[in-house]
Length: 472
Image (cartoon, rainbow, N blue to C red; front, top):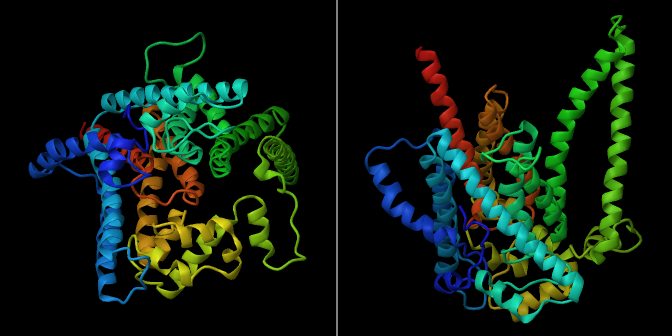
């Protein structure tokens, strides 16, 4: 848990023969899986029922990937199909292992609370190193050699001028880990005034401070997808606060006399309309701030339909065109293989024949196609699921997320504070992942799986408590 912030440790990446996803936590996970989880299953340990949809997805992914070997696939730079399919399946099994171990091991509230403490200390390390990066960059305008050396111990990536990277490979990965694990917990803890620690700093819990500085760290990453995901999570919190506020204002205004139904409707519509105007102004202010500090956002409000491919050109002006080209290529692959998909790790073979005409004018696309020795990535888990596992695989994965969401909602409406916190974490995590799924396409990133494991474990504790209460 303490090593979760490190996403791409160079020595592990070298052993795994990858330059990107190589989390240190995966090494510890391997030992736990071999020496605890396998004996646990052998002794008929109970695996949570929420795992059924994801196990169905795993089975389907294996089937469609094996089926790819019975189909004639286009060649791509002498890259072996076995290697690509093997990497796709291995990364999926890594993610599944994170989920199974976490959900099976955390069997009581004390262990879950200990987990939250470790999450906090790991999050503090992310914040401190990120703030140090930004401070040095602002003062010196660059990074000294020794900071690059320190970063190279933890990551195969490099420090990025003007953006916080934390201990991750790149700024967008920093935003992803914050949105999928740390910020949902800190938000939920702040809402319910919950803490996993015994100390306080004046009136603030440790989680309150981590939330404030964690949100600033997210902003310092300048990840646009990450910021949008966090804003949606925060919007859910504010909507609930506004609903309660509206009820209180309504009760105060009409405390002496019950209003007519038409009067009540007019009041509520006016209140909601006022809030829409307020939050629209806030969103505009945030967007304008991004325009000031992030050159990629300079043309945010400059959309023109006068030229061909206006949407792609607009996305390219926001330095987002390449991703949209990859998504459209994945969509075309899905259109050609709608039921089975092409198999995990195999979509890249179909990219040269699937890229839209405008995509060939983009420098990054041409560079990766003609000068890179690797397969192109889809850059979105949602589109990857469609292209590589078809509509059936996408539906199985989505059904697992839906089960996690339903379990979260059940816990969210409970009375016990610790259970409600876990429920809110799940809701916020799913909201964030709806957006983050357009930025990350690797199954081996542990944060979604780890958070889902905590939610599943919390649901098991919740169900056990209810069974005990009913027995009495």
